Image 1 (cartoon, rainbow, N blue to C red):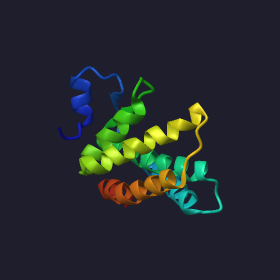
Image 2 (cartoon, one colour):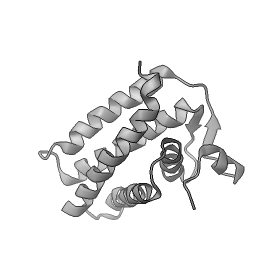
Image 3 (tube, rainbow, N blue to C red):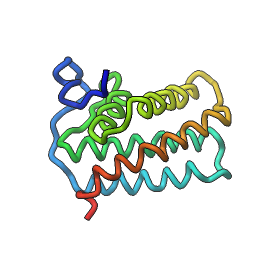
Image 4 (tube, rainbow, N blue to C red):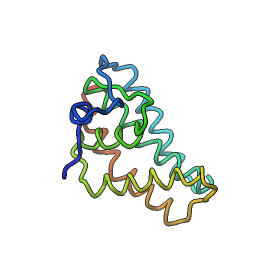
Length: 146
């Protein structure tokens, strides 16, 4: 099964996505935030939990920008992170394997709520995903950044 786009989630009854006007200002803001997060993720002076969290946040912020560039916004409905990541990855042509790895990072990020600190391999996966997916998301956003 391929990755689903926002309209497919909506057709299946998801409450995560709502139609929204494209906002070049917001798109530029998400990209700027993501660039800072990417820099923080690569900074080995940061804690491993920070590195993992900001690598994840980088991709999530770019995902929100991609969704908006296609006339969507994410709500706070249950599953909004997972569906936002999947839909943006679908719109950007990210492979199912790369999305599945990013979804695993989402789970690893949530381990902090269970008192589990990330391992080195967790951070490495998060950074690998960020480096693989971010350029594809940025390609989609390029027309909005001129």
